[in-house]
Length: 441
Ligand code: NSS
Image 1 (cartoon, rainbow, N blue to C red):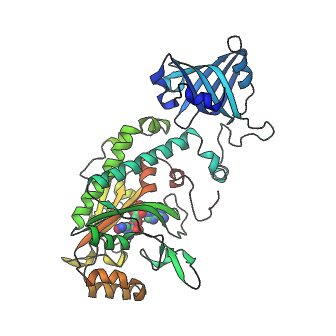
Image 2: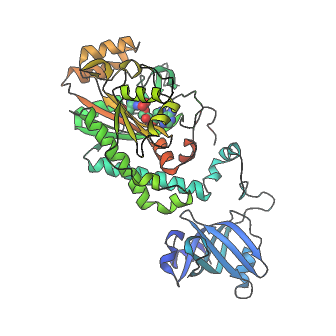
Image 3: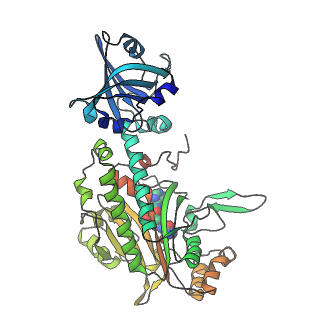
């Protein structure tokens, strides 16, 4: 059977094979595992959409039996056969294999390196290009894709216009300690973007409600389960919007992402053995507490936090553990927040900013708030933060020409997906993680 012939027969994916019970179908994929039992073979195929067990009898299908016997793990195959219900098989169906075409045979003397047993995480990360084939990793990437799809759907439905922001930037957005400097053309210096926010403030003044969704970079020296050096951020920004509007938009967005994954990726969540009862209740409204209340709670729980401290992972875990859904902490001390944050008119030492903390110890998934709209105050803040004013002239223009109150936030995709999946570390939820000591493969 040739590839051409196979594509003209009943070509199906494993995910949809159940709909073809009783019919002769063709699958294109890889051999995931093979159990040999005398005159019967029990191959397990994978095609990216799932796993399907096959059964081949030497007596009934000698050619298919010979093609599969001794076939090495991850050899690519096109197989045809009849779909039948088999409650004991993964997915509830199996394939009575009648024809097999081996597309590429993995050599016996150079076997597929990742066996169906436990491997150390460094071993797997070195082989990330292969590791993503395992059912667990593939399920995570399918959930990631659904989370992205749902996030864009939500933003589009809310009337936000996608405006892509640059990756090469002339200045810092989120502090100078995590900037990646790059040698730009000739003598010029540039930095990889830490956030699209500053540019979104410009597109928001042009289009009203906007968002961007792309990779962002931080030279994070910290080796934690929540930090990558390259991660994806979805950032909305709206003209004439305030802190309250963004807290509400963020809770709507997160809820839609979670509920869409629960609805459309239930099988993958099951593969991950995720306790979905912990996600089912993620719906607006999310609890809101002030920074002051957060410090009080931490102290009551014996945490040494004092007013004025920034929260780390431990503090975030204590705060979020009191709730069954994400919690919004707002009005932090201005001194621990970014230069662009609007002060609270009621208490100037506070910033009109907020963080949304995920449950189960996943930490901050959203950070945002209201921006300084006043020209003089913004110049003062740039100077206090030792930021180069020349590089920010275009940004100051936004306060010279029709400045308006505006607000936005950034949602960290990997932290959100790690929480939805219940993975231990966020490195598993991006196809090729970039971390302090890892840029390979
Ligand atoms: O630094 S943030 O809190 N905020 C900003 O960058 C704003 N300029 C966004 C905005 O208002 N438009 O980062 C936002 C989120 C944060 O809550 C995390 O979920 C995620 O980005 N984040 C990270 N994820 C993975 N790895 C690292 N290193 C990381 N840093 C932030």
